[in-house]
Image 1 (cartoon, rainbow, N blue to C red):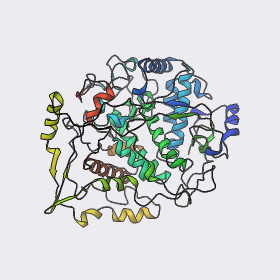
Image 2 (tube, rainbow, N blue to C red):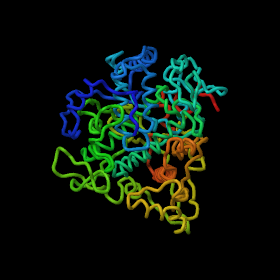
Image 3 (cartoon, helix red, strand yellow):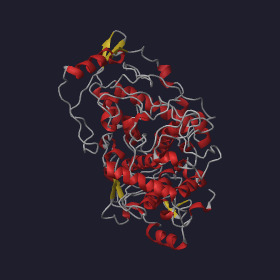
Image 4 (cartoon, rainbow, N blue to C red):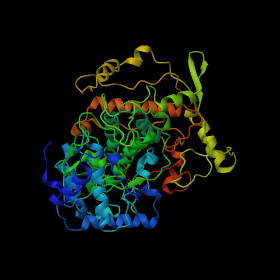
Length: 541
């Protein structure tokens, strides 16, 4: 990798960091005593949200800081650094640790303006079924979509007054631009939980997140073609303040993967890059970024309503973690973790919950229409909804009648897939990946989605906002954007098919209530009950 001058630390700072981090496993370092808590944006009070916005606006406006001290940088310097480290921090094992330190430096820069700031995350799974209507994309927060004629955000928000200083050659407009399509669907809570529970090596988890849920938000706001139309779709993506809330959510996903199973995955890393490998431009080893409560880091995360149970995916406490031969050990015990069970908890649990009623050659599954008790605060400790008997009077009766009349409420399955369909485009992939050698785009034909057998409830189309219960398939990452990023397109499509199958499973699980369902959208975003319409500032492209 080519070392760039954009983010080199001073010699003094480098020596200090190396003194605490080189050759020291993250879990063996002293744990910080008072970690800050990073909260979901909507868990912040109105005054905390405004304080954060003011700090970001001042960060954009302040003069450049010393190159060797990122905590004194302005926003343009963060955008420049990210662009200069395109190859060092993307599509490789450094993706998670590099961005973790990048976000940490950004948080420090904000605290140099307002010491009360803790970097929030955007749990976009809660907005996944209608992200343009999210309360984050309003003039009072981070601004909405761009104008139809030039994609400039011009809705009166603080970002609509910004001038772009650092520009990617792919997009050279002076305003902050976004070009979100109105019917984009992001990854839902269950698909994120599936990535965390089913991926048992760092390499597999990193690839699933970077190619999937991470990429989709960039594509949503920045365009999925070969030429981006929003800054967040370029390598100067930190020009858009939503970049930092999005990547804090990505870091939280890694944190949840690391800390599941009593921390057995805390130091799990790939065999192709040791924990002592230096991260480009930071002058720090990867181990410095492996534990959010050790070394230079001192933070944790709040609970979110989207959090699924991770306990069932835990391996036994013997063996190794990391890659095929294992590279990471638990510093707190002599035993290390084995590979996860062959059948992931999530899939097994859903299969147990799903009743199968044979009717001739088809299977019928009744889709439950759930109603919830008044939800606890967004930060509530339990992601499991509290159910109450369904009311059938007044407005609720009308809503229930509308849902019951909707075609997805009770559907007879399509014909059962053939054995040939089940293995189409997967046999070669399985054989190839068994040796640890992942296929490239040219090596195999693109995989195609095949509906799972015996599942009867179809995902509603993306443009359908009437179905408040079921989950839509996530949108696809544009081929042009994936190629610009150097992603293995085969793996991108395989990950998308896995996400579609997760959606099929949860939609066909009677009694399952997704925190991503549109029935909860108004609660998360402060709209009037039952209103799930695009935000007024969201220009329709």
